[in-house]
Image (cartoon, rainbow, N blue to C red; front, top):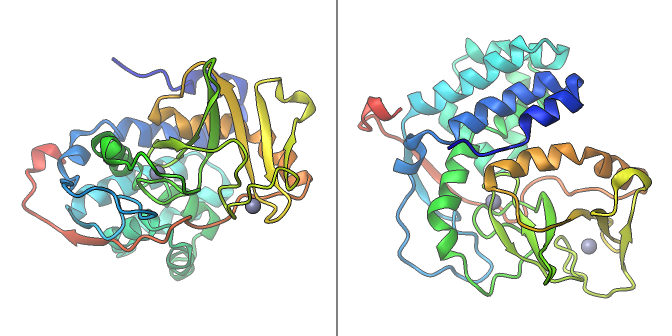
Length: 289
Ligand SMILES: [Zn+2]
Ligand SMILES: [Zn+2]
């Protein structure tokens, strides 16, 4: 059964977002391709303190499968007609190493993507935005397979599966338990109520809650006066399904705008710098690819 991601609602509320929403729609449909489940390395060891499950992993992927997803995303982004996305067309013809792009995106290595954009005269922001989606099907599969391996004691600010900073926090149910959610793998982890994920600040005098006028009573911005980072926080009965995190993050962009206006920002790059090896494998049955 298809999971309700809220995509049709978002399209009707923001018709101007259509060019980007079709790109996201493509990656969300790729996220259910069983190919990605088949390439997840099996884990036996318990999670080490402070180290995301993906750190140090050696992956074997089929170059052609990654290339197929990359080309599909670029074609859709290019077709959508925005001037920045139109600059991505050379990706389809350039001899780019898809596995290196995949790896750079997995490890949130922005420098590699900016350099790649420069070599093919593509807009660096547009390339980064599209290539950031490339490992999402793999990451969602990691979270499906490994969620049970996350250390119960995990209290870091970054994702225990993939090392990314949280997309937002959820305050759930009557017991008001607080979780961080990852916009890449869809993972979730416990979050203390008064805790800045970026700098670890726990002093309540340094942590402020901003409630933008139009946000409604269920969403606030938790901001840190020390590092000037912020996290959006939503009160809900239940957590969102993993595939919906990307869209929940996008749908609440008015909170990001409000936080930015107050001088707060989300840090760039990874919360934990992953070192991952990605090897090419041509032996995976093509029927799965
Ligand atoms: Zn993650
Ligand atoms: Zn902070």
